[in-house]
Length: 296
Image 1 (cartoon, rainbow, N blue to C red):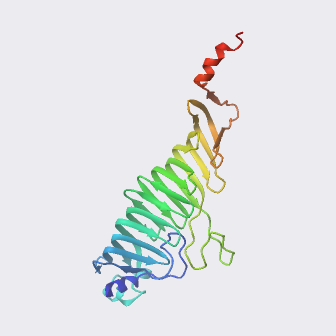
Image 2: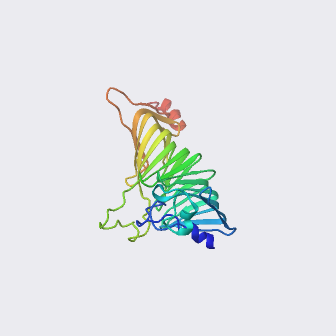
């Protein structure tokens, strides 16, 4: 475990982490079952076998972890300034995780096959199968990639992206951009769902932007459009561009629709100078009854 202690000496800070933010907090503690390798010439630390890196209440677990570091303040990369001298030796600028990757805080969880965390950009990019970001109120999944931008307080899901609320409301699109609520400023009263001071704050989604083949399903209707905006807080979604509302065999088309995800009601909104269109197919029983109306 001596080498794990050397890796932990890399990178020090003071602020508490927010959500899945690894760019703030104290030193990074690295542990592993199958050993930790420190390659001084390459300026990299590699941990294998149930590897774990923890910082500021955020933990990264994977089969293999690779931490790339550099000298602080532009100092030359010499053995005398290696991490063995402590926090002044270097800072981690990139963390790579491979195999069964799980990133967790007290409230949030992200899963994938591979993750790259760029400390300079404050962004984590996850790829692989079963990509998933779980917050207290929503679950965001994707097929191609899942990005977590801690400084910008947003997540981007690409490829058959889906956001599902804890009560089952669902929005699907080619790309979803989830914007998290801002953390309370220092000294302000915490929100009811916020964690205690000094602990990771939950990533509460307040707005989701949807792009490409947007689809919303309610109990009785399917609403599709080119793009949209959804608020998990209000339960309202606005779809734009080639909007189509389908209920059974009945169809309404237009350029804009408002969907109340809580009540399950969707309505078309007519744009200036344009008309909404609809195709209403009567039920078979109603069609058979009409010829007999007025007969003695």
